[in-house]
Each structure stands twice: as C-alpha cells, then as structure tokens.
Length: 363
Image (cartoon, rainbow, N blue to C red; front, side, top):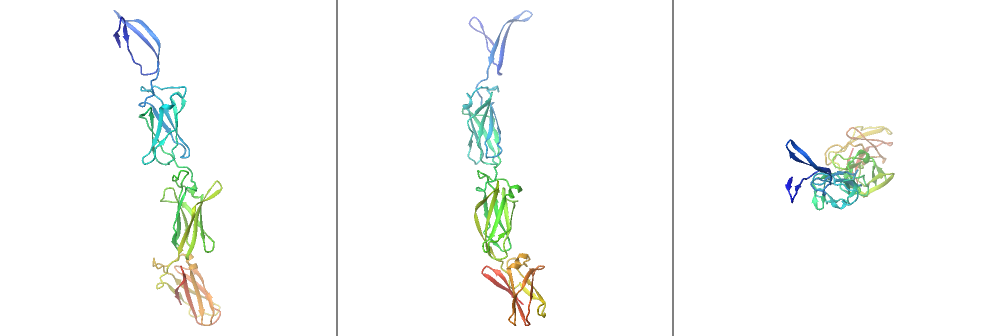
C-alpha cells in the first residue's frame, strides 16, 4: 500500500512467511510501467510462539514404569517455525495430562532438541486410562492436544492380591482368586504365560500332605487367575497359599489362608447297604454295595474319593471282626470282606462327619 508522506511516499506491506524479501517499485509510463528502483535483503523472522498454531504429539512409553515423551513444535501465528539454537524458549511451555476421575499429571521441564522442537517427559503411572495432554504457552492453552494410554508393568508379587474360599464342602472344588498387579498396583492383563509363574500350595494341616492345585487364567475377572483344588472327602483344615516365581525366586502372595472342609451330610433314610450273598464259605470274599445319598442334593455320591470317607466293619456271632475294603462302583460303592470263622455276620457302614463317624446303615 503506497500513501503520501512528507515530501515522499510511504510503502507498507506485510509478509506472513519467513525468508528474505526484495521490494521492487515501478512507475507508470505511456507504455505501461518502468522500474523506479528496488531494495533487497529485507529479512522476515518468525514471531512469538503462538498457542493457536504450535503442535504437540506424544509417544507412549512401553509401560507405566517408564516416562512417556511429548514433543512440541513451536510455531508463530502464521505457522512459521520459531527456531532457536539454545534453551531460551524452554520456559515457555507447561504440560499437563488429565484423565476423568484421576489426578492430573504434570510434565517435566521442556528440553530444546533442535531448531523449533522441544521434548517434555510425562510420568504417567496409571495403566489403561486415556489421558489428554494439553500444553500452555505463557499461560495460554494450545489448541493442539495429544493422548496417551499406557499398558501396565509386569506382575509384582508383593502387590498382587489373592482371595480364597475359607469354607468348602468335602470333595468340592476349592478356589483362590488371584489378581495380578504391577509396581503401581495397576491390574496386569492375565496371560497363560503368567499363569505358569503362579504356584498353588494346599496343605492338609492334619497330616501335612500336599493337595494338588492348578492355576489357570480366569474367564470372568480382568487380570485374574484361579487356583483350583479338590477338597478331601472328609472334614479337614487346609492351609492354602500362592507363590509367584520370577527370575528364579519364589515369593508368597499375602498370608496363608486357613480353609475349613466340611464333611458331606448323608440322607440316612435313603442311603442303603445291600449284601446279595446270604451264605458264604469261610475264607470266601463277600461283596456288598453302599448307596450314599447326599442330604443336600438328594443325589447319589459318585466321586471315587468319597470311598475314603466310608468305613465298613463286619461283626460275626463268633466274635470275629474285620474291616471291609471299599472301592468305587457304578453309581455306588462296593464293599469286599472275608470271614474266617463260621457264624452270622452283620455289616455296619459309617461315614465321616465333622465330629467323627455317623451310622449310614447295616446289613
């Protein structure tokens, strides 16, 4: 724009991009325009860093154990790079990461990388949450934002949680639920590989025998695992615990849980003892059957392990007494015994209860 001045003329113009400018002036002649003169070497530099055009982009760390990196591209209001060869603009930027319902996370100090690029570290310690990253330039919020979502770290035994059933029926499946957590107590997604690092330990306190336990990935709990074991056939007190093995070292997760196993209650009316041999020769094997009906389900107990909860004693009028061998049958249990003396024999069958043994029936 050319306007009259004081004995001269003023030329005003605006350049929006950085670079070197030359000004050429022409005047009107009969045939068009002729050159009047020019001025070269006018340098257009970038303006102040603008919150409207500057950009931020973040790279998530491998997991919550390390810091994420956010990069700021400093631009002026016309999107020209605001370049620097030193740390003079590092103090312009303030970064914050926010997620709904969580405490905000402040970024570290900006570090000049090259030209108009700056780096800020962000120590996010909560996994799976989506954080929105914003940057202020001298108190003015940049329009550009970025997001971060981090994965959890590896399982840490001292932060991992376990919950065990403290009372289970005899012969049922006892269970402990494990929730894997990392250094910052984030839930760690469950995998079969991690499941193999958990070791379930179940000990019968009455005899010190270990009961087999298996740990598998839970199908219902995020980051969860289940340790399953078969409770004994009788009333018992168990001690359950879980170890986590990492780098060759096994660490117990929380304290030992005391588990009470309640013996099965039988329906003594429906449960039956039947012997089909009414006459036998001394020394011959005699076979009888036991039908054990659960008092709760009203169904026959078919678990083979329950044979150990039964006791069969044959008593003869001759005074001879023997205990029968009890083995699983087809929906019932078989009792085998032999008497060496002649006489009349009665077979008495008992089953294990919390206080000892109760009568099931006789033949």
